[in-house]
Image (cartoon, rainbow, N blue to C red; front, side, top):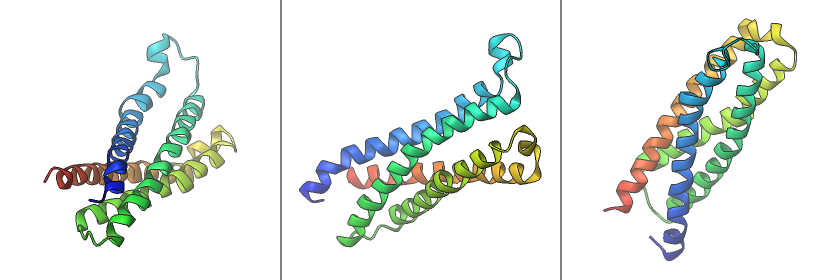
Length: 159
């Protein structure tokens, strides 16, 4: 690994780990708390639609981190490929994470925001449900691909 690559490796790994952690936290902690506000507040002060708006704002902010990590993956992993490193696990997991991250940030979050802007009734539609389910699946694949990339990069660095 070149001197420049070594200097960028630790910030890159930290960015991947932070993004992975934020993604897992959003799904495992933020979403369940957000969609059960009555349990925490003692009474139902927010509608399901309002809770969804709050969750969407969380995901919109997460999308900034996901996009930043995607750009970092493209640059770091691309430079590794251009320098002759042919590790198919890193390449495949990075490509999958970049694609899923881009879909989340540039398709699913804006699509859900657009439907929510039409009002609460639209969020009960089959179109919204389909988009939401596809988004959940994409984020799960993204999380797995990011985990594989992070572990692989650490394995290669510790050889």
